[in-house]
Image (cartoon, rainbow over all chains, first blue to last red; front, side):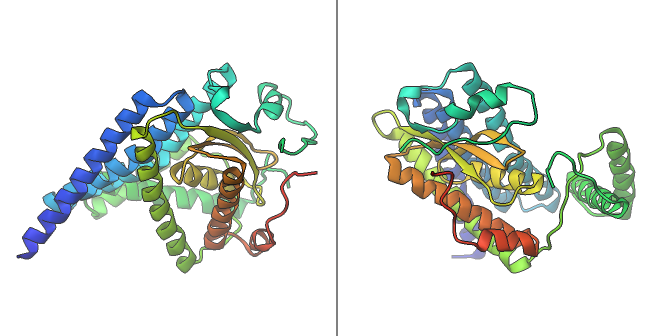
Amino acid sequence: MTLENVLDTIAAVCMITGALLSLAAGVALLRFPDLMSRMHAATKPQVLGLLLMLTGCAIRIGALVDITTMVLIAIFQLATAPVAAHMVGRAVYRDGHTRKDLLIVDELAPDADKFTEVSPDQSRQTPGAPR
Amino acid sequence: MSPYEIALTKKERVRSRIIAVFGLVIVWNLLWGEFTWMNIITGALVATAILVVFPLPPVKFGGRVRPLWVIAFFARFFTDLVVASFQVAALAFRPGLPNSAIVKVKLRVVSDLNMTLVAEAVSLVPGSLITEADRQTGTLYIHMLGVEDADHVERLRKEVLLLERRLVRAIGSKEELRKVNAPVPEETSP
């Protein structure tokens, strides 16, 4: 088995795993009950799936010019996916579209008011989580 | 100092601009695919123009970088990312709806940089996403997926604080380190 074979195998494994993870992310998007859960699918398996795809491509292509672009894609994907998920999730929580019956605890509910107000000086005397 | 009134000294401001230009030049070169003098010079021009038009918010960085802990942080981060991805993938194919929880975690180091980095990392590791963040008190409200019971919630809460500790070990200042090395306080419980 030559080095090329080994590299091809690694690339293939990366790409197939990446594709399967992306498929799982798609399935999760369809099956999960509310938007917050769906955003989980959009951040984790999807990001790793993409990273694996890029790794596979980088190994197969092997040209530095293309690899640098892929590195950038990877960095920005890691940096932006959580931010996007946070912005969407936050808007949805404020709009009350969360499936509260599936939440085991919700420690945001008692504090939720202070995020809808603009005043920057609230005193913090929030009691602990309900036990 | 409250994070709302960040005052940087002139030296700090210059330093953070230089770091920003440096980062943008690297991105520019990566986009072109090679590091050449031409790319570095044009990159520096573009970076300066961008920073003039879109000035960055002031970021206070008082710590120092500890390379070994940075490596440790990333090693753990990628392990967690892999584990988290397969967990969510498994949940996707499991019958029944997954339970979740929204948990409040008060970080021990209250700074914009620390909060941002912890929030980014938390979003990518096992079953958690940020729902809301309180910048003044350094509190994150984290949505967690696939939570089974109250014990599980506590375990995940501890995970977040441990992640913060790993991060501060990698890039925090001495004083921040002292804060996170103290035993995990009994959060907000009366």
